[in-house]
Length: 531
Image (cartoon, rainbow, N blue to C red; front, side, top):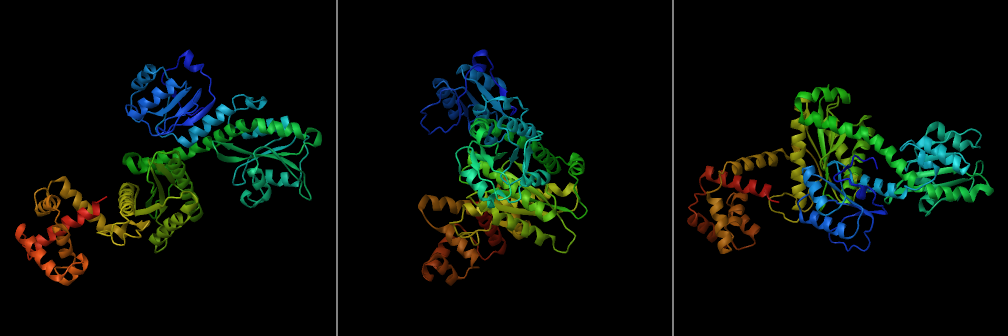
């Protein structure tokens, strides 16, 4: 697989275990057939009950191996657990993409026993195309789902037509696959098919290439003629798994640039002494400042295969939109958040441009995930040294909007909570974000532990009273009895009685402006921080 896996306990028995398939682990699933399968332990960590249960079940079911991420666990502990269950354990890097791992594993398993194409260096799609052309007796082209030519054969003497000539010169199809009926037919077919010749061209044999259910692209062969057609179609079908493996490795080679980009952007925002070096490596233009944008997907769960796939699709969406807008893109996935560096711009309204960019990305987000996307931008950093501040502002705003989303059904203290915003610039929420910092200061320094708010909360919990709601309404309406009655849905006299009891029972001087300010700060910061 060449995926930087470390074998925790290699032994002749483990290394010689046959492999038949790949399985994503779900502790709730019933295992019908696990013999000789590689199991990917998504969401399992060393020492957890799920991890121990997985090793126990895998060992008892004759599984081939378990792939797990260490997440801080020491290798000797993982090795000890593997030896204890006599189970082969492979350790993946913490930042490995589960989607890529499962696709590579499946393609490796399926393509392990193929014909002479197996001698081609993994990821060399031009050499693979030459091998395919030699086997099928027809000129070959390899095309990705966007219509880009990833590789084509160069064997002499094989006939080609004008369409083949144009596509190999431009390295892209004349019509995008999404709008080409021939591509749609090929994608819908279970195996290799014959595509009839256009009016001025040649017929083709074509095959959709998939790995783990993901469409990687397609292979197109100039029809070698009726005598060789059946054998060529059969050869295409047989080389499909290995084609997927080659295409995945070619893509992961291009992913190196993506990983390097992420490392440099992380250095920019986390490692101030080396930030200037990272900026130079990225070729950043800092003359007009930069702003950090942050993007996240609101999902009920994280760590699943689908969530990993969605966040990578979000990264590609952000990269594409920024490339279209600015002609370049500096974006990266760090943890579960996608970041992008947005130029400050030379115009008089760079923030309007930033707002439009994140609105556009949010508007397109339905194409990559059924779950909503939150997008925010921190303030403009005039220098590299200010980028950590811009990132902090973007993340603070992002977390605040995520909190509003989770409280969408609760109208208290959240403004228009029934339809909370999904995009925002930092300055649009600067006041609530500053209040949250005040609330954190109060909490961290124990300033509210014994005040009246704590006493009122304890009384409400003990006697099922509504004093806190009464106080909240009093402060929100500046003591206006009628407004309080409307807010609390009770009679004016009931409000007067509650306010009197509140003042007497807790010795509150509500006429004291400093007291009112403190109580308002406590309630407001509590409401903003509520999950």
